[in-house]
Image (cartoon, rainbow, N blue to C red; front, side, top):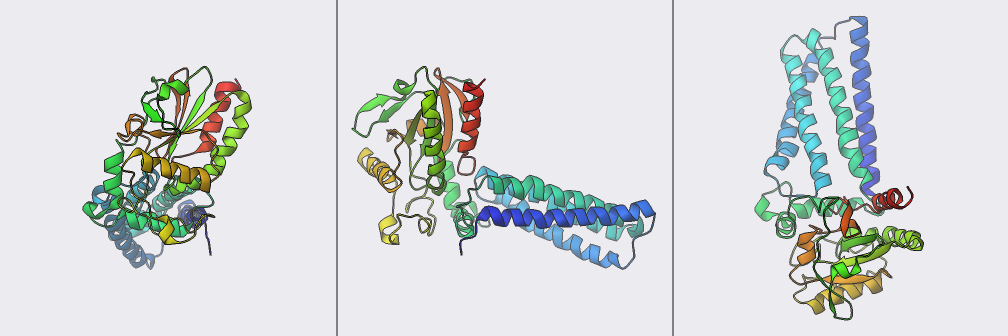
Length: 348
């Protein structure tokens, strides 16, 4: 059964909100009534304190300090848990070891707030970054391939992100749009700036092997059809592959795609020359009915580096300046944000 990862994350958020509110109500009742919390809860609080402290340190805290480099949105969610879980454990431990009747109620109140933060600042925002067609199995495949629970040197994700990215930031809004050489599907080398003009230009950086790019192709093509009548131009720059056999490999990442036939037909490697990159771009165009104008990045990956655009990223260029820089992909790739930026620009 295909269960969207966003649905699971929202369910986790809902459960955490229920727990957080229960703790707040429980503690508020005792605080308002001036009753002392029963001594029988001391052992329970001590056990939960030790458990949460250990889980927090062994899990999210270790991942943040020693784990592999991972997509920003997942890292942000783990960072929230690295703060809230150990603090919850420490609060319960402190209350259980000190004056329990006084501190026990306040510990429950404090932990209730932390649980709400865990849900509302951690799991729920991550769920909103995921398309409904991104399933639990795919999420687990990314986590497994990232090796976030193991050593950095064993992580395919860490090696790929270190190779292809320069931190998280893109080109600053207001900065001059970087120029560079692109290759047309007719094998002509032209400057990217030749596509700049008086009309806004949406730059879509991506590749076929990025599952988030494939899953959001419908959104970006719909966006193109919506804004073309207002003279907004769209251009895809086909960059280095996101997930390859010789790089950051994801198991079974194509099985939910309509064009999937067998695993043997979907083994892709990094392009070694422009013809190989062109073949992958043609595969994208044919398999996904991708009718957006498309050019290839140079084999020196000039625009990938200039725009820090791997694995996928969206920009809007107007009058040779960057007026919108999307967050780093995969989960920061949001066509709806481009739509909002175009409305602000053209419908003032």
